[in-house]
Length: 246
Image 1 (cartoon, helix red, strand yellow):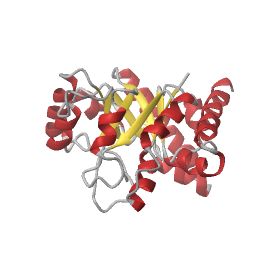
Image 2 (image 1 turned 30 degrees about the vertical axis):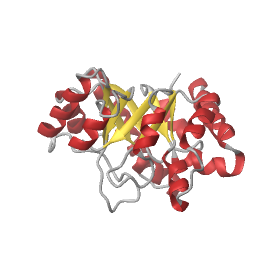
Image 3 (image 1 turned 180 degrees about the horizontal axis):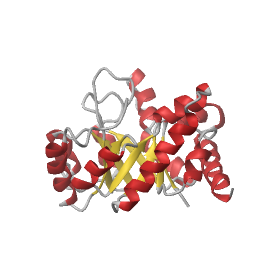
Image 4 (image 1 turned 120 degrees about the vertical axis):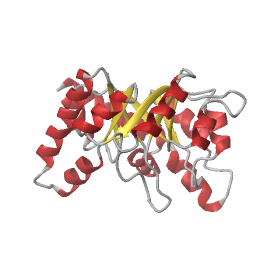
């Protein structure tokens, strides 16, 4: 079965909006895990707009933590044990711009290959599983393989937008993602996917096959406002299971 990683960044976003001690991301991670999440994902950004270093320190020992981070010296230092040797289970390298509201696309594994290869080696030397967040493009996937990544995480943002708008290119986008999954498998890479996925559009991604884990945050946290976090996680898990059965 496809694993579900729940991204709790937006719990921290709400906390930071008022500078309070709540809502608590650690409590959110526990609730998500108790409801069936297979792992927890956080993005520790350069500007610390939501997740804070202390969240990372507290989450790492308790959860199967996937750390999204930019491939910078600061973040590599944090991931490889700056804080009393605390390290995440896995790292997903992502692009980052201060001006963006959320991650806008995949890393360029070709243009930044020298830097990325160095970062990947540093992380893997500490036993950390490394993923590269990229577009479903054969050249980018080959680039991810060359720099030594264990996984790719396919950016599904364009698919999600087309699904919502009913765009005529939806089927072509699904075929592009499917081709990317198959290309990665041939190169010995494992495949995750994420961005913009909801309980309504997750089914078509699941049915493509070959994806090991979906990392989903915003739609689950938004849904949780109305039904509670445990229910929102269970709904997503059920949507994944239903699609796998079809």
